[in-house]
Image 1 (tube, rainbow, N blue to C red):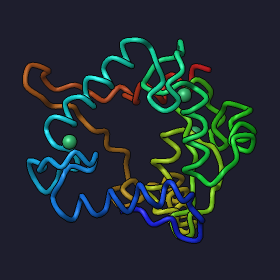
Image 2 (cartoon, protein in one colour):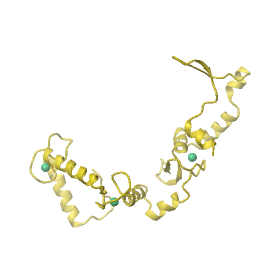
Image 3 (cartoon, rainbow, N blue to C red):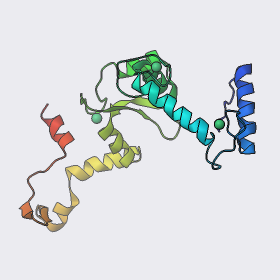
Image 4 (cartoon, helix red, strand yellow):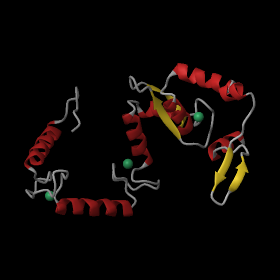
Length: 198
Ligand SMILES: [Zn+2]
Ligand SMILES: [Zn+2]
Ligand SMILES: [Zn+2]
């Protein structure tokens, strides 16, 4: 259960929450209809869960946003405004701040456009660092955000130790069923190829 630490909640919400918690602890449907829930995992009885599902499908079929109930023409279960609000909220930003971070619609590290962009944050303190592409975000995660590791990766790429140790460039072969033995032709991921063609 999420604590709303330091936030005052409305009296109506407090009443709703108290009833919810009470029903939950008694193993009853939180809608307050007095029915038992099918398992400790469920918060709703089978009847309420089914009508909730039906209501959800109906609203989706009508093209309504599940958050604000307005009919929208975007894709997904939420309208674009609600998606933005939710994203901004999750990262502790105002909607305006969030928009300005995405304004350039490119990765702050590799400048890629037309790729999936994510909001990157410092895992130690949660501080938002910037908007970067998924691949750069994975690279940072792989290096565990460690500046020294990243520096050493550059050194490693600039002077691959295997070449020093064996005194030549050995090239990886692709060996697989039905493929025979193929020499490496500089296979690169689709994303990297796409980027380098820009
Ligand atoms: Zn119920
Ligand atoms: Zn909405
Ligand atoms: Zn990038």
